[in-house]
Amino acid sequence: MHTHLLFLRMFLTKDILSPVQLKRLSDHRYSSSGRTLLDPIVQPFWNWLVLKLPLWLSPNLMTITGLIINILTSLILICYSPDGTQEAPRWTFVFCAVGLFIYQTLDACDGKQARRTGTSSPLGELFDHGCDSLSTVFVSLGVCIAVQLGMFPSWMFVQCFIAMTLFYIAHWQTYVSGTLRFGRFDVTEAQYTVMMIHLISAVFGPTIWSTQIPSLYIEIKFIPIFIGIIAASLAFYSNFTVIFTGGAGKNGSTVAGTSILSPFIPLALVIVPAFIIYQKSTTSIYEHHPCLYILAFGVVASKITNKLVVAHMTKSEVEYLDSIFVGPGMLFLNQYFNTFFNEYVVLWLCLVYSIANLLHYCIVVCLQICSYLHINLFVITPQTSPIDENYSGNHSLSAPLLQSVSNDASSETSDLISNAQSPSYQHSFLEEVISINEENLDDEIP
Image (cartoon, rainbow, N blue to C red; front, side, top):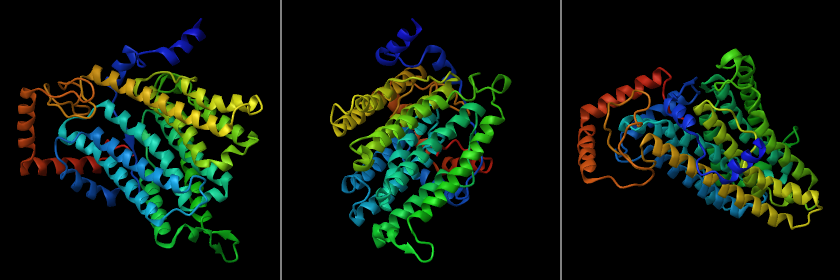
């Protein structure tokens, strides 16, 4: 009976979050620690830039705009080199570098803009992490194409799935300890490294990475790969050290009071089938279509990461099964029945289904949270109660998503913007941002 109800909930439920989860989410407070190597260098630029942004610009609108640009520039590159071996036009690498820079900048400034406009909320944190989980897939694919790693499909598989796994484990650690921890070499440094790789490919062409290193007999492309693997290994060690040290919950459990190993199962249900299908395919589906294959499983990984973030913010148990696993299941069953259907067609069906499933989940969750917190997703509305020092968007007058603001509210918003644009306000805001950065309490999410 319980299994039957779980099946119905996965496919037929209208609301994804329960009232208890929504209540816990509204009480959630963001916690982070650590500072990366580039933070002291890039923070002044981000602090300067956020003061130039219009006060009507919603933080979530900034995040989604950056993600769309990042995805579009990456898709252009993928279209020119779908197998990761073909030499794409050099301008596509410039596009990818610029697209990633825009995404990173907007992603770094959205938290600052939220504090500046008094619209911080748990939804902003969730929305930010959700966009990051999807961006990770496209950034990984883009850098693989930039160095023509498709010539070594096994290395391309390892590189992309390490990136997705590392992002998931970072939030696994957060689910256990309650605090998102940053290393000295973290997301910011990795993104700037990817930008440099794209620019090198744009200037010298991607074939530069196939140059043999004298006496070592390896191609140059393996240098950033090995450096990335070393950095990832250190990050894995750091995260698992926190995980196995004991959680923030009772008796060393997670924040939800569950086993610290519980997030492993959804991750295994992504990686293990991806590897088995890749190895057992009689048509070499991965070798012929690596970008399409990684995108399909990357979307699945994005959803389970989103659900892990939700579990952390709502202090809920991690759900092991999910309807999105039907996508990889199509490929698995097709192989089980001796590839009854064309594997390329099934792979496309897997991708389309997974994207639809992820979008449905994200839309429903965002609508629920907006409705519960009485906030908009992409529109800033005036506050009607004192601003909370951590999440001040919980009591704003609004309806979900892009509902129009009334004339009276617009008048109040104009007054708010007029006051906030004064030099004294801008100066005090900048001082506040700088002090927050110095105390490592900045709620900007990577």
